[in-house]
Amino acid sequence: MQADLLTQILAGVSVAGLSGVAGAAWQLHRRRARPFLLLTAIDGDTLKTDQAVIIPDDILRELETTTCLHKPTLPYDLSDVHNVVTTIERAQGSGPLLQAALRQSIAALQAAPDAVGVLRAIVPALDMTFFDDFLCNGLVRGTIQLCETPPDLSEMVSLRESKERGGHLQLSLPGVALQFGAHLDEVPALRDLLRPLVNALSRAHGPTIRKAFESILAALDKELNATQSLLPRIHRVREENSRWQCQLYLANYGETAMLILPTGWLEIAGSSSERPLRESCSLVVFDEHQGESITRAEENGLLVSPGAEQQFHFVTSHLQREMQHGNEIRGRFEDGRARARVVFECVSAGLRPRRWVRTHWRPFRSATPASK
Image (cartoon, rainbow, N blue to C red; front, top):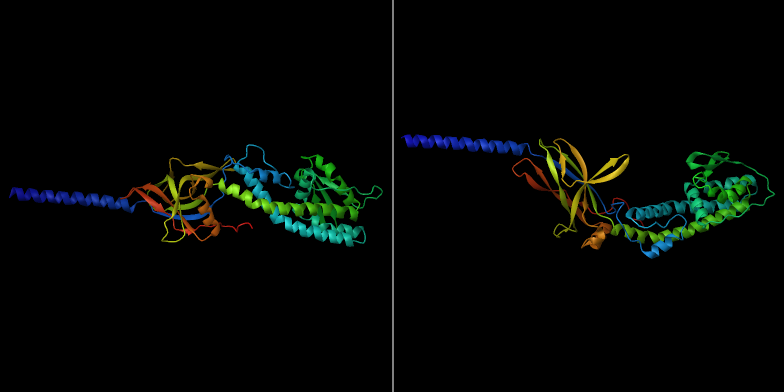
């Protein structure tokens, strides 16, 4: 009788204990971190300014023959390559517009009957922002030649020098104010180099201005041909020395914090049945310090508080040229028909405190059109 009573008491205690444990576990699970995760962007041209690169000799030789591009100084790093790419892309974007404006001005100068016609004819070219940069670079590099105006001509209009933009020249015409020759105070030699064009403009001498514009146009034609040839090759140097950068957004809708662990994977696949290519990644946060963007590797992980939002990045551990499937991955990115996702571990309260988290698949391609 006593034995039966003792068994019933112990059974009741066990059930109550198990119920308490189960209840506590359920409460812990209910309060677990609930991440809402988005893979917002993938970029294959991640810059790391101290990443040393080797620039092929043929590219360096061609850089020395151009108007706007400058040969970097040793030792070369990835920011040097990026600056060359940016300058080429600007020339490719603005150059054709300046070409058309110069041709329009040259044709108008040839037909100008008088000084008023000459001053009207120069507006399309001088009104282009790229005119100033290209002219000054060409004069300094010696790719643009200017000839002198006959000395017996009287001045028709005056050019005024302003201290803005590091010192530049202003030419005021009816209905328009033209300016060129920026940074005259920083590069004093530009004053002497620009003097022939200044004299021609102030005297509205059409033949001299036309010859100057023809020299600028010839240099620009050569520049655009050179940059068109250089762009894919210098782009390749940048790609091979870059890492894949995956930008993520996470919102923690749970009641407890979660810790994103510092390593993960980038997975790329062509179809749902294909085994994905994988590249190891490190957790990185982009931040600002004294107004400049900086990257900070989170080697101990990133803590996301309950109710908080966080943007962060996973960046591949290897450069593209170091990856076993680097060329194939870049080819798929350029093709634009593959898809990618990021996989990483996180730690939080719950029945499974450590678990893998996967983003949704997203198209593996550039967010901007490729340069032709």
